[in-house]
Image 1 (spheres, helix red, strand yellow):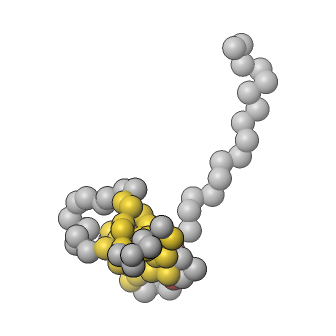
Image 2 (cartoon, rainbow, N blue to C red):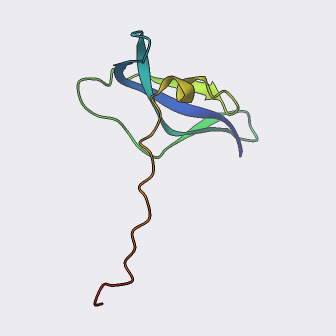
Image 3 (cartoon, rainbow, N blue to C red):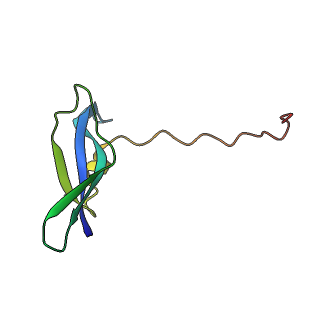
Length: 87
């Protein structure tokens, strides 16, 4: 099987820094093409709740548009100096 698409769900909305409403996306799996040209989907996660409409979308593997639409991740925490811990 050859991976050919990513499976993406829209799981809500958010407002960006310019005040525009955007969709929030999460990649939930990958789609594959078998030798006989049939398609299989491997689901790694499934959103639940009122924000998930039940629809899944297929995007090209190199298409990063859904990922760019989501807000940036929280900044990484600074390293903690644990050298004085008693254990």
